[in-house]
Image 1 (cartoon, one colour):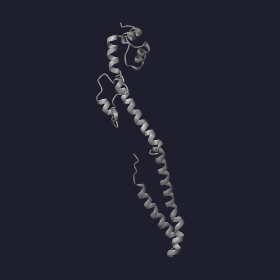
Image 2 (cartoon, rainbow, N blue to C red):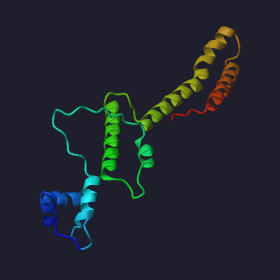
Image 3 (cartoon, rainbow, N blue to C red):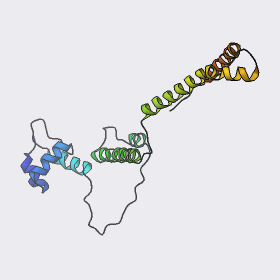
Image 4 (cartoon, helix red, strand yellow):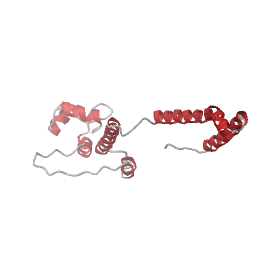
Length: 176
């Protein structure tokens, strides 16, 4: 059995609100009966809290964010799980990457993948339909210039265009 939250706050030199917040955020864990073991709570509080921020005269620290932080952080985790500082770090990295993607989308550097695929499909279908209609539009004029029967030329052009389109249809386009 430990001490009450208010007693622990006095022991720690903080307000009882700070202790309640520490419990809510997972920095410290109360006993099953709601009391606090001061020794264990002190260790947890120290381990799961960020160091106090220095004044304005502190030096700046450059932080390089990895492209994929999850594998790097997971490798160095203790067996008991993540600490609060590690969880906050992962959260900040994810927020930074999300904001980077949002900014790129706002700048017009990104497009919706499904919308782009649908647009390319529509363009390809329009192109195919134009080629399928081309022999019917041009065969009579070509037959007159060449002095051959219009129907024969139309059938030959139609067969050649369909064969060429079938070859083009065998191409597998990947958009990953």
